[in-house]
Amino acid sequence: MRLALVALAVALAGTAVAAEKAKSKSKSLYGAIAYEQASGSVGWATDRPTSREARTEALNQCNRDACVVVATVSRECAALAAGPKKFATQKGATQKEAETKALGRCGSGCKVSAWVCTR
Image (cartoon, rainbow, N blue to C red; front, top):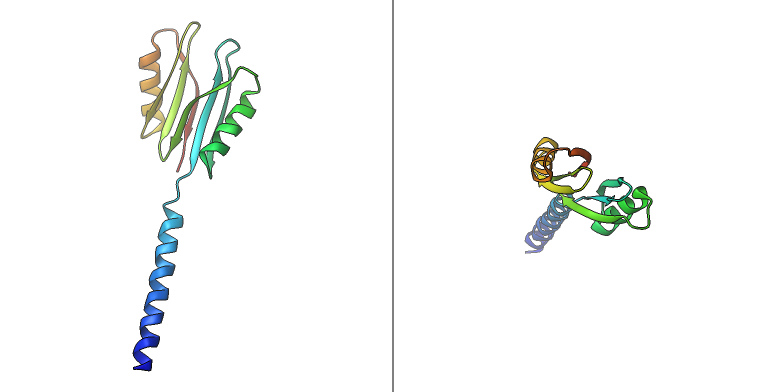
């Protein structure tokens, strides 16, 4: 009986360790893009442990009082396309997809100003 209890305890401990490893591997990382249209200033962050840290880093890099976070991502990509009078952000599974979608939404005269992908 005692041997059976020890075996059960070892099995449960192994299951708990495996579950914790799976949980840590599935932890999302976050990215963000910040933008100020008047100056064209852009900031971005990628692979941050929290959404808040990603947004804060993007705003710090943008370095203007009027910067705003225009995109946040987790396990995907985002791109910012900007032109003289408008801008657009779009998400996608890859950098290319996000850029293509952002350029399509922004229209003629726009160029990709920033992109970010997270794991």
